[in-house]
Every structure is written in C-alpha cells, then in structure tokens.
Amino acid sequence: MNQDIHIPALARVEGEGALTIRLKDGAIDDILLNIYEPPRFFEGFLHGRHYQDVPDITARICGICPVAYQMSSVQALEAALQVTISPEVRSLRQLLYCAEYIESHALHIYLLQAPDLVGYESALSLAADDPQLVRQALQLKKIGNELLKIIGGRSIHPVNTCVGGFYRWPTIEAIHNLIPDLEWARQASIDTVKWAATLNFPDFEHDYEFVALNRIDDYAIYDGDILSSSGKRISPSDFEKHYLESHVERSNALHSHTADNGTYFVGPLARLNLNYKKLRPMARQAAREIGLKFPLRNPYKGLIARAIELVHVCDLAIELANAYQPVGSSFKEIRLLPGEGVGVSEAPRGLLYHRYVVDEQGFIRFAKITPPTAQNFAQMEADLWALAPSVVNQPQEQASLSFEHLLRSYDPCISCATHFLKLRIHRT
Amino acid sequence: MSVTSPDARDTFPGITKIIGIGQSLRGDDAAGPAAVSLWQKAFQSTASRPDIIVELADLPGIGLLNLLAGASKAVLVDAVQSDAEPGTIHTLTEDHLASFELGDRSAHGWGIAETLSLGRALNLAEMPAELTLIGIEAAQLEIGAGLSPEVELALPRVASLIELIVSGAAGSGSHQSGSTLTSPK
Image (cartoon, rainbow over all chains, first blue to last red; front, side):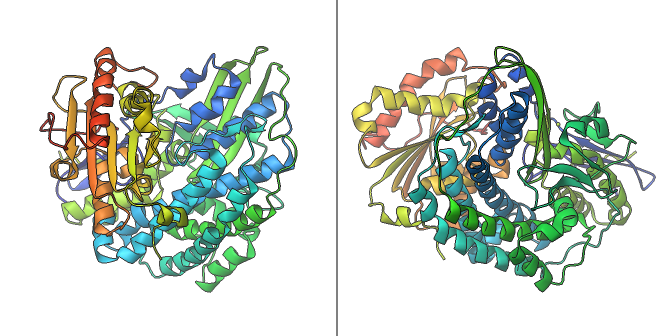
C-alpha cells in the first residue's frame, strides 16, 4: 500500500458509509470512518406522535432488524405507562425475536461476511462456485422471514406488535406448521457451526470490554440487566450514566464511550462471551464440538458466535412454537398517565437502548435511541488503527479489502446508526 | 434442499406478482408502493384476480427472491434516480437491468439487479420467466417528506402501465430509459 485508501461506499454493510486512511511518510497518519447517509431524524420525528405509533415508526429504521426496534420501544413505553405484559405476550415476543435472529444472522454469516473469509468478491461469485451453500443460506433466511410474517403480519416490517402486547394472536396452526422448517433450520445451523470452524480467520485479538444484556435464567435477548466484561452490572435505567454518546464532526452518527472514556464492544461476541453458560444445551454442544475456547477476542469470529446463536434461537423457537397457546386478550388495556421509561434488548448486532417521555395525553415528548452500531464505532476505529501496521505493507487493493473485512465482521448497520461508512486513503 | 416452501410448491403456474418497493417514510422512495396501491384501487377487477398477488415491500433486500418465488410473471415498481425529469416513467426488462451499473446499496447491500443475478446464478426454479421493472424518477428522498407533486402526477400513468402489463397488452419495451439509472436507496 503506497497511497491513501479511500473507499467511498463500503460494500456488504447495511447503510452507507466511507472509510479514509491517510498515509504520511509511509505510516498511517489518520483513519476516518465517515457516515454520510442522511442522519436519521427519527428521534425528532417521534416527538409529538402518539405512543402507539412508536413501534411501527421505529421498525422503519432498519429493514434487517425491525423487531429489535419494536422490542426496545414497546418495553420502554410499557415501563413509562406502567403496563405489565402477560407471559404469553412475552413468549410470543421472544419467538418473534428468534425469527429476526434467524434471518439477520443467516444473511450476515453467508452473504455479507463469508465471501471475505473464503476469498470471494461477493456472494454472487460464491453462489456461482458453491450454489448449495448459498441456497442453504437463503432457505435459512426465508424460514426466519416466514416466522416473522406469521407473527408480525409482514416479512419485512412487521406491524403486529403494540404497546401492551400484540394487535392479534397468530393462529396456533400457522405457528405449528412452521415447526418442521424450524427443525430443518436447527440442523442447518449446527452444520453452519461446523462449517464456520473450517474457515481461516485473520489472526487479530484484543482485550475488549464486552457489554451485553444478561439474565440469571436464560441467554438474554429480549430483556435483562446490562453486564460488562469489566464486571460492572447495571440496570437498564442507568445506561446513560455509564455509556455516553458524543458527536464526532466527520460522522452523522453519534459515537459511544464508557463513562471513563473507554471503547466497548456490543454484539454476538459480547453476548456469547458473557452468557455462554446460558445457551441452550444444543448450542453449547455445537460450540464444544468445534473446540471453542472462551473468551473469543477476535472480532472476525463474530461469525462463529452468530452461528452458535443460530442454533440457540432455532432450538428456542421450536420450544416456543410447540408451547404456543394464546390465552385471553392479546394486549393489555392502557390507562394514560405521564411517565418516562427505558427499554433495552439485544438486536442481532448488539444492545439497543430506547428512552421515551410520554405526556398525559399519550404523546411523545422526548425520544432517545442508541443503536448498537453507534456504540461500536469507537471500537471499530480503534481496531482499524490496531490493524493498520500489518496492512500498510500490503498491495493497495489488498489493504483496502483488509480494512473493509474488519469493518464487515462487526455487521455494522449504518442505516440504524445514522442518527452516521465509504474508504479513502490519502498520501501526503 | 430447495428454496421452495411447501405453499410455493403448490402454487399453480401462471401467478403474476406486482411488487411495490420503497420506504414509505422517505419522500419519493414511497412511489413504488403508492403506484401499486393506486393500481389496486383503480383496477379492482384485475387486482382481485386469483392469479394476481400484490406485495408492498419497504426494503426487501435479498428477500426479494422470496417475494418473486412462484411467480411466472412479475412487475416490480420502484423509485429510481437518473438524469431524467422527476416523475419520468422508465420501463425496463431484466436484460436492461443487468446492463445498468446500479450504484445501489439499497436492500442492505443488495440491489434489485444484484438480487436478481443471484437468483439466476442459483438457478432458482421459482424465478419468474418474465420480469418488468417500472422505475419512477424520484425528485427527493427526504426522511419524513411525502411524495413530490411530479411523482404524484405520474402515479395514474404508472397504474395504467401496470394494468397494461398485467393484462398482457403491453410488452416490456422501453418507455424511456435513463442511461445512468440508479436506484435511490
């Protein structure tokens, strides 16, 4: 690499961003991760809207993880309005979340990150050489989308979730009909873990601060307390005291730091490292069979973490689908009262925090959304700096790919984070 | 292992799918779903035919392959950006589409052309034999904005065009095609 790298539009990431690497006298002078997709004005957009509009509006922030936006927002609003949901609603929300994990993880593992690891330019060239693998990926993703459609009404932006529960119960028959597909998906996920273990991951490890939701009784996705690998455990309502956002001029997205100005890492690696023991036995078994040692400190191995999570969510989905037995009303009646609430859930790419203030008429007076990718930006930049010395001597094109691959391993969702990527390398 | 779900396997040959693509909260990006909805209202007798399936998709990405599965004929309606005047209607076949350099990272890394190429590369049997893309030239894609007047004005013509294609009266010749067509998302 003998000149600056500028990647004006990063491929195989969600949303739009650029990366510029500036060289000076043969050494890296500056690394700029820039997000130029128009800032998402969702927080402002929600101001003055009725609380019940929020799950449907925030679902539009992302085409890949709309369920995450719905789950964090309804929990925040239910806290604000002091609504307690029924156990049946909670189970169905968990099942809906499984659907999103299946479609999102299948997409990222096979179509976004795998081409980097097996040396293909894109999933298209991978498809030409290994169509069976890509068909399996598409089938997995499709099963996730089908489940999403049955519960959420639509396969892309589900509409059935509401504050207090669901607008209607899906039929038992529709849910049960998907069980054979989910059983296929669970086996395909176990095969995915074995296949993931055969990939050659770049040698790159760091001692990250991992942050993820944690529950005593299960592998936290829908809700939980916030646990850090530093040992700190906080309640969701204290999130903003410990994890701060600041604006960075080059970026439309806010960057997050810990209160003592450190970077931290959210996502599947964080969840798996912090909650490995809470995985369902079948997922733990899959991890053991490939000889996985924890903690995993290599961001590229997020792919393995996603594969293991796929086994977990498929197995959980089968249990929840078998047990699905809706009782009574699908939602709680809500009495209006002014209040404030926070909601945190684990989007497929990491912790997603929402906070709302609702007035006495049920209108939103304040909205704050902290997406996982914004929380990972500072860590991604730190990783790019750490990677740079080993890349600087590679041929230009190879160097550029190396940087992109590292970023893609985070499964950044830039559309979500723009409230914020493309690569430039300048040489002076 | 096949990508066909049991229900798709059962669909009879001859299904036509009309798919409106675009984000309803992002200005003229909503043109595709808006045009398809208008066609449904204006041509109810065609739209309610049992061999016709309508899908409105915000950001289908690679899920477009699932939406297309089982159709023998498909009409995609989407907002596009080229050098043409806002509201210009472009009619493209899949061949045209493949020849465009789509600067499109929509669909979370998956543009329409790329997604269709993937479907063809995998020899997915359920891909429609006949596919037409109706592109509506966008003026703006502002988050929270509605449709531009020029785009709004074009919708009835798009609805009529959908009807012509669905009823088999129109080939998918080029109405007008911009040379630098890009999908806006």
